[in-house]
Length: 214
Length: 224
Image (cartoon, rainbow over all chains, first blue to last red):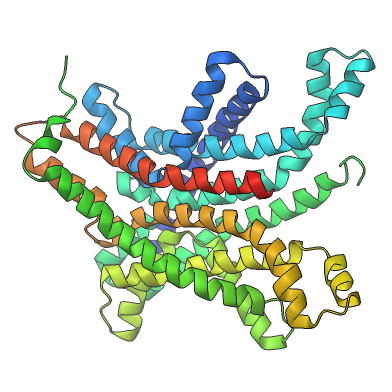
């Protein structure tokens, strides 16, 4: 036990680090995509749609294999960690884009029109009127995506990242203490995921206060 | 111009082998989907009922399945139960068990959501019109709940198809594994095979899931 615990700790830190980085990039990609589609920017809009379809309809494991083993053959070489972050961002971007989109679409047209008639510029309208409301509506979707993406990090062991899954498998192979290793695995994932899930529902309730007409 | 490694696919039966691998993964998902749809629907209807201990157990099961990554569940069933009970489940059977457990939990959530999404006034009005309980369910609630449920369950199907790619990690020879074998076998003759093979697998998954998600979106739009 005393030997295994620090290994799990290190693996958990790696899982969280890649998860957080990947989710941040995913949010950025998602925001760009949803804005490109919302504002109907010609070429970018189509690109965003193609990307969203590709990323939503393929498994992360297949995406990672392509990035990690496929891309180096045409000269794009990266280390496993960058691959993990890139893969998670590629997968998560489309899910985040959908969450933002549903938020943006849920804000009534009248909000936009009223803001404009009050003399706000288009950018101000977006910044002060649309975005805060859209964000509040997207929060449940975003937290669901964050949890989903954190769970997806469990496939990283396939590209030889020493995350929790990798450590568990490694330790089982070394000491045959299968039950202990699996229990620790579950405990560590709970330690990562439960707070996020609780925080998510708390945040959801909090943000809902600000909702218009609630 | 470097070779993209696509030529490997036209050698011998390589492409057919890849498709065979995809079929293996698809079989696992189809069996699990069938089990999940049936059990999930039953569970979703039952879980709304109020009866003490069963309800608590149900919630524990649902919460645990929801929060654990599917990989962890696979490991628990494949490695954990082998040790604990001394049996030797094949990778295929373990994955069917895991994906059915997971799919059932997800499906029951969808069913519960769909049933509770029908406003109470619909029940009340139907009762006030003199319909019996089964009639209310059959003619008023079910049609409305289904419109919400069907697109969501189709989405769940694509999710389950995508998630079955994980079975690679417990040694099932599915499409990614076949891909690895093809790449290894042609290491000398086409060193760039990894690019072509993994790109093909990527596109195959896309071609499999895309039409299904389009269908779900179409239904959602029509009934939304």
